[in-house]
Length: 240
Image 1 (tube, rainbow, N blue to C red):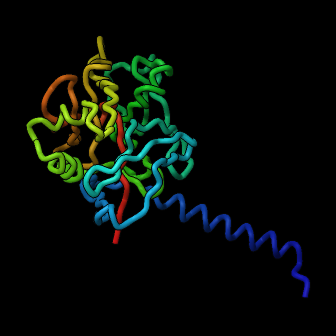
Image 2 (tube, helix red, strand yellow):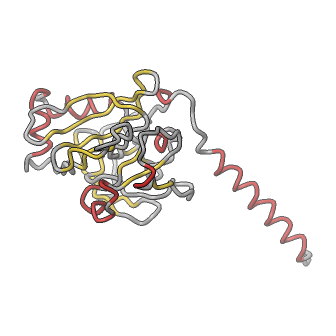
Image 3 (cartoon, rainbow, N blue to C red):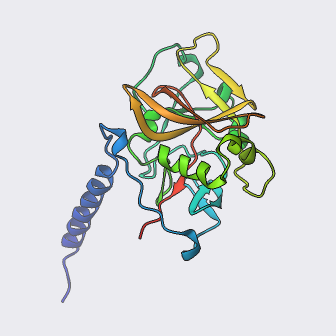
């Protein structure tokens, strides 16, 4: 039996619209960032994993095992959410001290050449929807950063271990930070410190971050405004 051509088109159109609605609804901005709960980890020894992960733009990131966690070993460079929606760039001439509650990225000193070495810097509004990292990955919570530090076994020296050539291969890309409120000098600390987002809110418009400072012994837990621009490392979802 032949199916009328117009019926096929109409049926396909319904499917496309339905699929679009499903994808569009998967990345709603959540009002409470602390409700982003990563999937429970299991020992990595019991699974197989890729040594490279790619984002939606095709950028490749090596993967390293630290304890029972899988981490990217370089800072995120993606320019689109995993749904395909572009992430807006904060232009240099708009860095005027205003905090915009919209997901944006910048290159350090607005220089695209810095991306290959240091990745992009993102504000927290990019992260809130849970769709920045590649499929199956997420921005780590405070507890996951602490789990990595605890695994290293020397909390007071974890910063040096992550920076040294010890086989951990975390590759501390110290990409600095951009704080829009600092009008005269919004960019600082490239090659001196790395600042990475967590998905953990610690107060009104304030989020926990983790920091590595060149030559410093510790990994520092800090807190920054949601409007600041920091680096991102993603961690693998590993579920039972």
